[in-house]
Each structure stands twice: as structure tokens, then as C-alpha cells.
Image 1: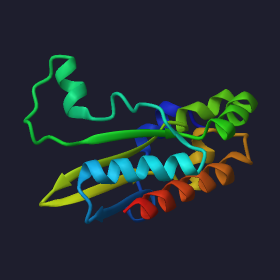
Image 2 (image 1 turned 90 degrees about the horizontal axis):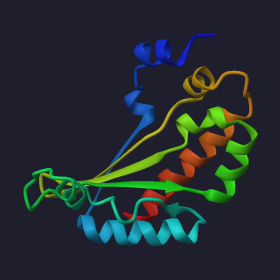
Image 3 (image 1 turned 60 degrees about the vertical axis):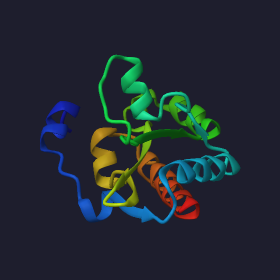
Amino acid sequence: MCSLSVFLKDFAVNRSEDLYVVDSDKGVSQFVRDFADVVSRNAFVINNADTMNMRDTFRRHGGEVADDFDLHMIQICKPTKADKSLSFNPERSVLMPKFVMVFSKNGRTQIRYLSYGAADIAEIVPDDPAFPGSLAETFAKIRSMIDEAR
């Protein structure tokens, strides 16, 4: 068993499996509204609705970004699943924040979502054999919600 710091030093994202890369014909704001609706219908919540627009958040804290900077970092959670999961093993919390990134690039709305493979999950949270499968279900659901909102 290795420590988290050693693992993270050697961690390499399997881009084809772990990084979900899609785009949308919708504008960023429309995608964000539609995604919020899909998330809500699936018993997830957006934890950072007031701070997900990074232009506004950066400016509130003295940052300087262009008016057309439109990155949204959407943190989603399913409280009715996370409560049980984290009560069972709080070590799982390091993998619990789930962020969907939405921004425009080259005239298209881009969506990015980073997840982790089962082996990586087992390495980060050892001695918890049920967690990789449970988290994989959540990762798949988030991807399907992204697709529904696109």
C-alpha cells in the first residue's frame, strides 16, 4: 500500500477513459441552465451555484479576467448517496468533489469532466472494495447527465 502523496506523484490520467470531452451546440449559459435542470431531476444538487461562474468569482476576489471569460466550474453532489458513503468511510471524501467544467473555445461550448478508474480509486482509498464500483456508477451517471443536457 502506498501513501496518497506517493500515489499522486505517480498518478497519470488515462485520458481516453478518465477525461470526458464533449461539446455542445448550446451556449455556455444555456448548457449550464439545462444541466442544472437535469441534475435536479436526478436527485443531485449543484453545491456552488453562486460561485460556479469563475469570471464573477475571480472578480469578487480581486482577480482580473476579460468580459468574455466564461468558465463555469460546476460542483455536483448527490447528498442521499454521499451521506451514506462518507458516514461509512470518510477517507472517500478525497474523491467526492465532482466538477463539470464548461467553457467556450473556438466558437463552441466545451464540457470536461474528470473521473478516475477503479484501480486508481482502490489505490487512493485502499481496503474499501465496494467504493470503486459505487463511484463508477456515479461517474457514469454524471456523464449521462452531461449528454442529456447537451
